[in-house]
Length: 113
Length: 113
Image (cartoon, rainbow over all chains, first blue to last red):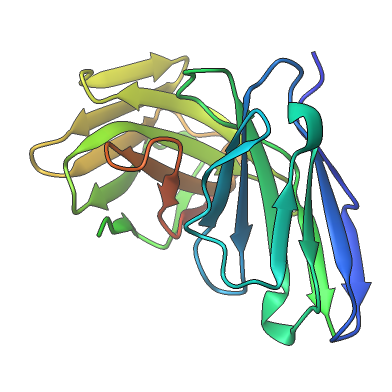
């Protein structure tokens, strides 16, 4: 069984540009989560999808971040326009319906110059 | 507001010694606590998940205990090996935020041959 996959693994962009990160959860997992770790800080929750619906988006830092999960399968996280403080590693995780254990992807390292 | 603390931040032990990693949390109203391992540049690998009704979980050389009343969990790794070198993270899911994991900053472990 394939694990959670994320694309790209690395992204380097200029301040003001747009970047879109993609996450493919484990097949059949209804729950999908986005987290991020910025330099020197602990991993922080961004949001939680149940199928295509946003269950909890309390961790989204501001309206420059837009997450979507069309059809309840893969998810994208768009940052527009990117700022320097958005640099960090963005993790995606998924879990089964009602499942407590979350399985994480390898992360996307975003660098904003 | 839940706060998760991991002490020590870093630990170095000779091969063969037992490892003891600590995690404390301020809000005892949790669904579960999960221990992860992260290797440099990689994603998070789930090691053990302890549900709130459980006192401990074991997998091979790993044993994790949970004491909700005191807000503590301990991860024991018996007979450490150089391959155990990694960063270990604990994360809690509180009852008022199902799905949202709150992470500690991690303990960086080095096992020397």
